[in-house]
Structure formats: structure tokens, C-alpha cells
Length: 461
Image (cartoon, rainbow, N blue to C red):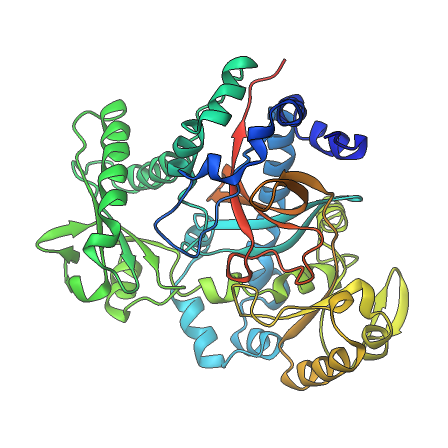
């Protein structure tokens, strides 16, 4: 088969290696047969791995890093910059009960906010890189990619391509980066400690389900400790909140003190643990502030205020470059491309280029893409969203098309979302979620059937 030149152009912007892979599959029909990638099966049945990997070079990775870090920095500033951390103002805009806002603000400080874990969702569109969501949470999909990378490298089709083309993959272990970041922060906080224990607290935790991850992470952590301060010890612990206890001295798991707690509970933390965090006995990632900083209305705040003097000239340029037109869905007036509009009338009349989504749902729940929605249903959804006051409308961002394997024996053009991981001030790497362009759902999400894949950074001259 012959691959279209425009597809090759899109891949070439990622790396020369990406084009070489397309040329390789053109000449190797076994690359299209899904059963040849049968080893790419994950224990979580919700995860469907795309057989073909994605190859990026240093230049592409740098573009993604700059975009993620700059948008992340702006979102972290919103509560203070736009609302002066006033719970009543925050409650009114986000439609969150004021007591809940106070609890979230009380369980954080600026140092904590600057150290959080996050993942942005970006798209390479015809007009550049655009951010469609930002999840400032420790419960992040895609953290499994280092394990996936080793799985991909051992697939005969992929290993043959890399061997024939002398592809050099840069070692970039996302979990190593995460643990290294956590222990670096802890080392700055507790210079004299000889032990740093990290606890991943997981909802519906079962020891058997996480056995492989526990062994793998402890091996990585031991390597980190051995390569740094030789006198520092510690281990990775997996559990749920019921297996922890607190005292005046901190948080413990079976008499072993926990120094770093990473919650996989969407921000929910036991009050006793929050108190230990406030007392300085534990580092907490990310905790109650998750709900506010991950709220999808944050992109609306950036877009609505992109010309405001509240942002510097540089910040306004960042917003214009990376944030698509986004608004809180209300019945009032706003602007579109500098022209004053009545928001409800505009949204009803421009269904084909818009989408709406609730501000706090995850997994693609509630997302409604106008171009895939009958006009009558669109109008019904808009009316309900305006009444609820907590939805946003966003200009639909179209992905550049990329070619990936599809079906039992074939390939197809796909839309791609790039999920980039940020740990405090550090960009750590990315993964991709993708969906065939002819899929009429259009929602690129694990829960909606999208596939996931690894990104290899290649060394190119």
C-alpha cells in the first residue's frame, strides 16, 4: 500500500524515525496484522494498547514540554490571581459549595501547589499545539507506560524495525522520574532523614492486583537511593486508607512511618492525614486541592481573561497560543474572535465547531461534540447545561491525522491526544490516546474505546 504524503508530513514533524516506521510497514505486510502484536495485552481490561508505537525526537519533546509547563504554571496561579483565594468568589464561579472550597484551600499552600503532579491533554492541530484539558491530580492514567515500553520493545515486528534502522531509544522511565522527583523534594525537606518511605494509597486496593507494580517500583526506588545518598533507605508501599494509622508523630503503615503519600482517590484524604500534612509530618500528593485545580472551567478562565491586564504580556501570548476558545456556558454575553456575542445564541447557531462538557466529570462522561450530535439533541443539552451553571463550551480542536494499525489486518488515520506528565517544575514524558478519524463518537478516551500507546524518544542528528 502507498501512504499519503500529507500523512507522512505529519509524522515527519514528530521525527524522521516516525516516517521510517511508515516506510517499514509499507514493505512489511505482517506489520498490519494485529495478532502479531498479541503480547501487548495489559491486565486492566479497560486498557487497549495500540500495536504501533509513536516516535518523537528531541525537538518535538521540547515543544510538548514547553506547552505543558507554561499552561500548568498559569492554572496553578488562578485561585490567587483571579479570586485572591476568596472562598466565596471561587464558590460562585465554579459552582462548588463554599465549605468544600474552604476545605480545599485549607489543605494546601503555595509551596504545596508548586510541587503537585499533573497531566495535560494536548493536540497537534493544524493551527499548532492546543490544550483541551489539564488534570492536576496524582491519580493519572498513563503512569504504566514504562512497563508498556518494555513490552513494545520485545514485539518481533517492532524490534526488527529498530534493529534494521539502528534506532536509538532514549531511556526515559516515567516512574523513575516520578520517584526521583518525590525523593528529591523529600531530601530538601528532611536533610537528616535516613529513611524515606513512599505510600501509594489506592481505592479498592487488592494486594494481588498490585503485586507486579510493587516489585517493579521498589526495584526502581532502590536504584535511585543507591545512586544518590548511600545512607538513605526506604521502600514503596501500596495500601488503602484503612491500612494506615496516624499519631502525633505522623502517618504509619504497620509501624513503618510514611513520609510521602500519593493518593489515588481523586483528592480525597482522611482529615487526620491532612492534619499531619499541615504539621509538616508528611508530603501529600495531591490531596483536596485536586478538585479545584483539575476543574475544566480553568481553561475557560484562561480563555475568558486572555486579554486582561491581570496577566502579563508573555502570559497573554501563552494563552492565545495554547488555549482554544473556551467559555463557561451561561446565558450572558461574551466575545468570539474579538466580537461581542450572546453566548447561548452563538452556541446554538455554531454546533458544528463546538463541544460542551461538564466541569468535573472524567472519562469522557457528558462530553457532547456538536458535529456528531443532532440539532434537536444539541439544543436540549445546551438548555440543561445552562441551567446547571457548571458546564463549559469549547471550540472543537481537530487533530492532525496520523496513521496507526486498525482492525484485524489493516491501518487507518487516527486522531491523537498527547498526555504529558508534569511533576512539580519538571516535564517527565508523554503517552498517546488515539481513535480512528472515522469513529463517529469522536471522544478520545479510554472509557469510550480509545486505544493507548507508548511514545519513544529517539536520538536524531
